Length: 493
Ligand code: ZN
Image 1: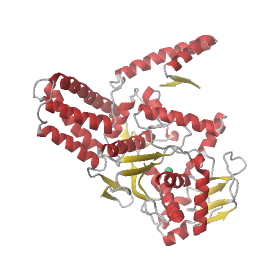
Image 2 (image 1 turned 45 degrees about the horizontal axis):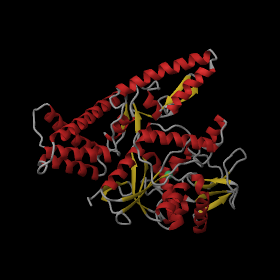
Image 3 (image 1 turned 60 degrees about the horizontal axis):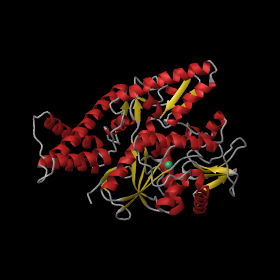
Image 4 (image 1 turned 90 degrees about the vertical axis):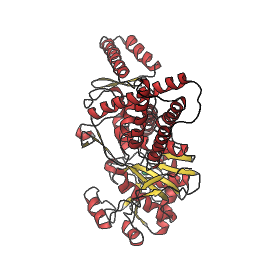
């Protein structure tokens, strides 16, 4: 098996990957809180860990990939006080919380499928693991690292920090943590502002709650990942991934919970992907630059000058190393669209040339085998996708030169390059030919959808319900759903 090197956030070192059980990899990644549509920020971890899983499987490992769905306990501002994000959405939309969860989980899956992100091996939900979470709270209480206060249970950070290091992952001292937390979080029933909730007593207006010996309540947000990773991957597993914004407090709290309840931090390698900015700024609803993935696919957002195909977005994300920040702009996406068209065009030409060249005799030239090795070396060097892509583009140059007659490639070279494209570009990086990859088809679909929806709006204005329903049903049969909004209609495939 080839060596794989991974940058471990915990040690801040690039390390040779050695799994707990040889040949098997346990991977846990924090999934979305499903109270709204997936946005550009969700695409990056999904694609990063998808490439990791694809690479490890290609290298010969059996991978169990667990990515959770957060459907309870994630409160507004990621804090310990305030409304549950899902319950709030349910209240605003007059739905059951589980209707919100179901709807946005389905829509998340749709977006992931479009991006050619493989489904995880297990996708557990927090609400399905309340019993396991309560059991961990009990263990932490028994170990003396938690206390009860008015029916809620809080983790005693100071006591834990006397025996262990709270802040080991993010590299903070308790004093630094104190400064960061005070302003963010109301103290409420806690002894110290940086203590965090393991179990919260539900207030009367809090609609999602379960019985426990302490109170009718709900688990703290950080607890679910400790419970579900242990349940499906064991006390000690290989890789825990997530966005850098989850490093503190979410993952820091997870480590503290693991140590306090089972005596081990539980994770060998912590892996964090960096963030995506939009035109140099953090993305946020309040900043007016919030882009969902469906907005990107349809072009329906004032920040966007056009629609971008899912593969363009995937290619754009892979052009940066996962540990670097990545800035979204229309110019950058348009450049990615061109780059993708170039590489997919060469892949098609290569297929045609390899078929036409007939039977293969001998081995590919050193130039071709070196390129193949260089691609794998880049990917095995902490998932360096931009370097791997730069080698794929060396292959594109060779294909284009053979096509215009300025250089020759033997049948064995063509087969060697085809193997490189098939394995690296399609199997591991997960790019694929798509009807809309040239951008033109996307624009055509966009224009047609605009016409159809205008027609439907006119029918509705004329109270011709039969016609407007007929249009909606016909679109639905094509796999296009339409949602009426205040200023018209939104659609997605
Ligand atoms: Zn998590």
